[in-house]
Length: 231
Image (cartoon, rainbow, N blue to C red; front, side, top):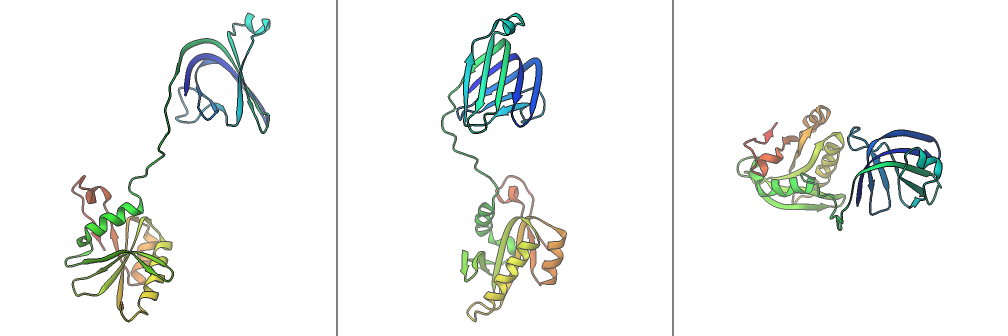
């Protein structure tokens, strides 16, 4: 990745035309071929950019531009659309190139798989005397996140979401209807667990006889002293 801080003007020609008058900006030339023009505002959003595939050429500065103070002329052309980004550089304040290597990609924390694993390890959050039967208990219509037994030995199916909505309650309802037809499992109660649960989902769960459990992800990881709350 090349980072250039320069006083420059920018002209864009394509589906629309745009002009940025001379000012100090950050120019980012990425390894994937994209070119981005940033100011010290707009957060992460560039003022203008060209997405790959595109070609980057440093052209010779003609006399007219040179007399106006232009020292470098960058021409970036989009290969598929022929859109054109012309960057006229008047002064370069910083120019550095960095090899960032291969990025491993975004690894999300607090996804449903993490919540499932932690709740399975801390099954007592469901109540005293609960025991884990298994994670990802397979049914004919899909896997239930957790199958457990309560203190009396009855089966409990747990559906886990990061954000609990009506769809999640409906999903658990379908699992319960199917599982309660199995004489080896019935009766099966349901618990809908999530980091946050919409009011409509709380109402629907109560109407269906399904308990709801708010999960405190940080507390489950031992990062604070919060507690899961069972309604």
